[in-house]
Image 1: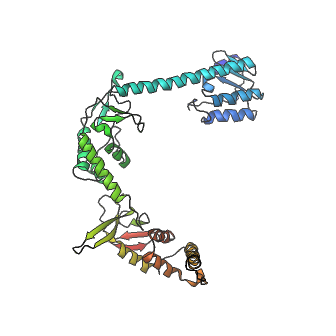
Image 2: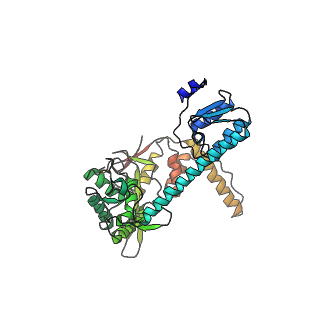
Image 3: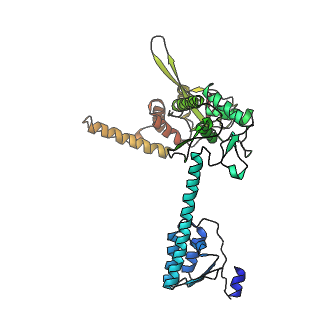
Length: 393
């Protein structure tokens, strides 16, 4: 292209290159720069390899033609010798060539999707094989997958531990990472999210959906690693674990850190059934062990945690402005309750009449989960739990 510019005595103001796809309008940063610089008068012509390098979509092509109509873009030249200027016939030809490129691109997409669908109907997986399987190295059989002799047995054990032994996803993740040093084909450790995706992937018992979420299922020709019964058992255990753990909301989670390993503090609830029929609920806080799976942190009951926070309220540094705003809102809510529901004349109470620290103690003991969380969010100090003791840092 530079040789062609010299032969035609063209003054090259700037050379720009871009690898971003031209099939979507307005998504190419360099193309947008070219349009802006033509409007600024930095140059008035474009030298390009072919018309479809400028645009393969109607939006960008329309911007180029508009620049010609305004007289800002005088000429476009291609390596093949074509010239396009502000001439009706030449602009029409440019638009036809750009539209033809778009048509070819759209047909390519349709043909690729049709080819992928045909392979799926043959029971062939049209993508990178999941962990435990290998794609064929033969180009003519690239959609065929085979068992990975090194990883498939481990993936089977993974399903068995969750399905038969009731292991959680995090426990299996620690087992793979710390005990087995398990890695994928890229040599990297599986992430927790990838592990859950594998546990929910029906490909391992022989079926697959493509595209995912499209509702079209196929029976694969690959050898299953597990049975359909084991897969269903895994899904049942994963769903029950998710409902009993992640569906709960606790007052002080995500607001404290472990003093041993720096992980976040999570919570769980236990129910005790007495012989007289009474049922008691207990909430315990413990290190999530995100940074250290062998952290020696101990459980702390919520009642003990609240009492420790109440004692610390006289010592810790509060964001008093934030607390006062919440206190004012509470007073206004109480006034509306007195006048609206009880029909009483509300007492004149000011936020300055109430001791802020006593107010926080009351919320910690009697407030709702969300009120308790708001109180801790106003703390300037970091809350740390270590050896069943709460400290501020």
